[in-house]
Image 1 (cartoon, rainbow, N blue to C red):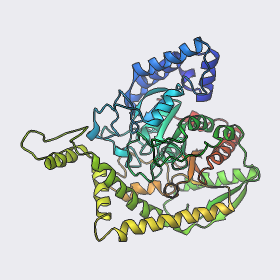
Image 2 (spheres, one colour):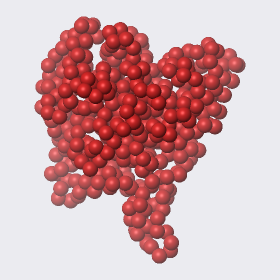
Image 3 (cartoon, rainbow, N blue to C red):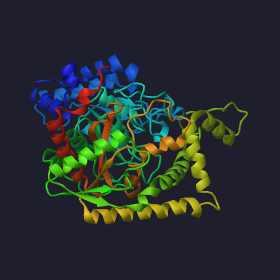
Image 4 (cartoon, rainbow, N blue to C red):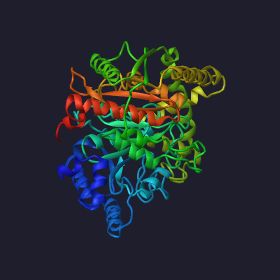
Length: 497
């Protein structure tokens, strides 16, 4: 079992295609791993044992018949519990949808199944993807496999923890303000936020519609690229989906190089609040890029300092609108429907019982920002700042091919450490938020351990919209150089569970 779960997704798929392993053997090994360690980690909210084995058997039958298998056929995957899955629960980490069984699959779920990827189950997350630590889940926090007393990032901490604890070689996350990249950074894994609109949002429960983006999570850059290629592409069911070809991400990951590229370093992505070990590893990564043949360019993007403030007006405003559909009348939790309450009272009682504190905080903040008399002062101003951030990126990408930064200002903090300090919690996404506001593509990959706490540090790579392949080209080059220089992938150092 140990040998199987340590394989990359690409290696696993190759062994299944050649007959060296069966998909059932691979799936059983990961299900056994989940059974052995997830009680401590709590990466999964639901494990679909029978469904996963049925999918695996179907892959083995295809191979036995000589049918061509896709590049990820038979590879297990952990799916963030924000994508609808026909026949098994989708809770979005909230009590308000506890036990809800969707009657349809999200487009992303359909594409995974069509590619014969084996879905192991649904992963834990901050309720409605609102958070930076996975402590806001109604079903309890997830632990970071590097140190179970630390957070695994958020909102997709379940997906990142599943990767880091070898419960799955692939996972899916969503990124509204950094919720793929920030968990990747603090768990020593790879996470990619594709260009906004590149991966369908149909069937993905909405938090902030102009920011939400699904994307791949993995332990290597190539594995992330293979998954990216499966899930990306135009979807007529999603009005925000972009109708353009998927960039050649797999080819870029197989041919990583930064020779002759211009790499930008933004001065706003360092300073007060950044952990010394994080800055040290980032500076080493920049030096490594220079060694590999990149030209380093200093950039000044002054509007980035306003990104956090703008985000925490835009995202709550959109969430207050999107979450209005959870009224206790059509699906999910219903409280107070005993014949003595009006429909309005039932809705109020249901929301009181079903939504957690962080969701309520953001709904109230967003509703206030959109209210008469305050709309222009708050929401309108935030959208103007968003335009300034987009323009700063446009100017930057006239000078450079990609931008690099730390992914998070600090390594993983202790569970409970920031629970009563929302502003400190929000600062975890300081480096990631500008990309969501502009709609660009971005990746986080490991760049070492912080010397003061021996926990993973993430390097963020940002590319222009629709140039997602640049992420993989640079990411693969950095990953290969890192392995050559320091021995082996960081994830191998994660403590045994």
